[in-house]
Image (spheres, rainbow, N blue to C red):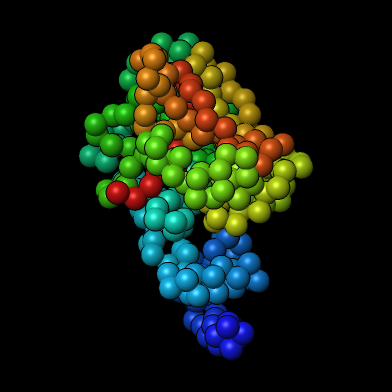
Amino acid sequence: MKRALTAILGIVILIIPVISFAGDCGDVNNSGSINILDVTYLINYIYKGGPAPGCECDSVMDIDGNMYSTIQIGSQCWMAENLKVTHYRNGDPIPNVTDDGVWAELATGAYCNYNNDEGNVATYGRLYNWYAVDDSRNIAPEGWHVPTDAEWQTLVDYLGGETVAGGKMKEAGTSHWLSPNTDATNESGFSALPGGNRYYYGGYGGVTGSGIFWSSTEREIADIAAWYRLLNFASSAVFRNAEYKKGGLSVRCVRD
């Protein structure tokens, strides 16, 4: 056993220079470099006979030309960045609604930037109401979709369950998250960011404190809300709840 592990470690050390020049492949936690956590994961996956995480997902481009890094987590391939697109897949524009009163009355797809500030987009992406998520013209790039409630649960279960998965999904440190950013390791490579939200009545809140991500699944008991997942700076958990469809939340996509 020790000889086998030593041999595997030697192989990993030899291939690190190759991995380092192969885009994101091998950089499991998206830290920008290959470190001991990445090596540990590579050993684990090679020993189990599986692929190195992050090596089965290629970067993806949306209709606007925005490129997104991706990450393999279990059997799923996820975007490792929040969606920024301003057009549906067929090229039709998604309306950018800045007025609170207009936003509150919408029953069709729209997006906004946190505090109506384009400067927030590069880091946190854009916020979308659920009508944009559900639109048949598709908000996700070709070959991708907004995850269902069940697909979110698959991710959470793979990462150890609701109480710990959030810490494994959040970007580590406090460059973008409020302190203490409890138990944030980003060992999954999901790199969740706290893009905040836009309330159904139009106001904004939560940036740097919470990352809230739509699912494509309506709440069963009413047609005015849909399920989401929330990560918070003060918790290692992932919270499941429902939000009014008029609300604006971040979007991550998963590969078909």
